[in-house]
Amino acid sequence: SNNLVSPTPAPGSINLAVTNGVPSAPGAIFISPTPAAAPIPLPGSNNLLILPAFIGIVPFGLNAQGRHDLNLTFPALTFGVEVQAYAADPGNKAGFVVTNAVSFVAKP
Image (cartoon, rainbow, N blue to C red):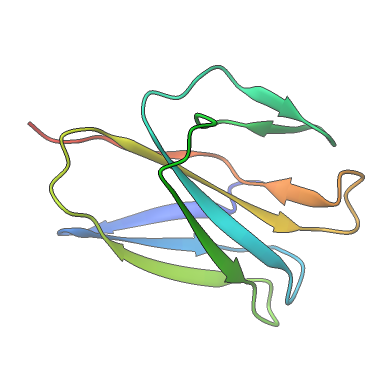
């Protein structure tokens, strides 16, 4: 469950890949404004690394290889956003895993 979300920027868009998950597991990507609060401990040695005030949630299902690709186009923003994904994982004592958070900073 390390680095499950990795960004690959392109002009005006971002590609997120959630990988190394349990095949066919459900999950979601949480989007919140920046800056993030201090890490919030979750059950099972996971941390919520983004603000608990979400501005968007994008549900997904991992494919047979435990992967989900999401291509997003960001409009011009006056504030930054952070994203973090979680996915179900029955092998984890909490029943889920979370990724590292990824920050996108607004350009002036």
